[in-house]
Image (cartoon, rainbow, N blue to C red; front, side):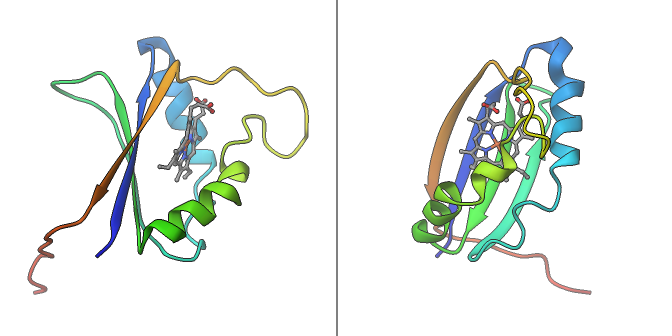
Length: 109
Ligand code: HEM
């Protein structure tokens, strides 16, 4: 079964827009990675102020390979110009790891 890796980002209220824009501009950086299955950026609405970066992978090895390789491209703050890295919008991050035990896709119409 797949593994789920959730990066929990602490984002000051005034940085939310910056964070979301940075993610939007980084769209397309992860989906070609071998073993990649799903990505969602989740904006908190109740119960927490943390943003969740939900990712799902075929197995632990796929996630590790991405982290050691193209993850770095997805996290180069300033883009390709090689200029000074802008301050992260997030002020903290924590990685949560899960194994998928059971799943149910919706019945297709
Ligand atoms: C579970 C896997 C992931 C980990 C462990 C991870 C790690 C991190 C960390 C540590 C930060 C904190 C801010 C920084 O230092 O830049 C961050 C922010 C960010 N990540 Fe990820 N990330 C993951 C998934 C992704 C994916 C899949 C994408 C692209 C689609 C992505 C794009 C970004 C962007 C755009 C930021 C915002 C930088 C900012 O704070 O301004 N991340 N990530």
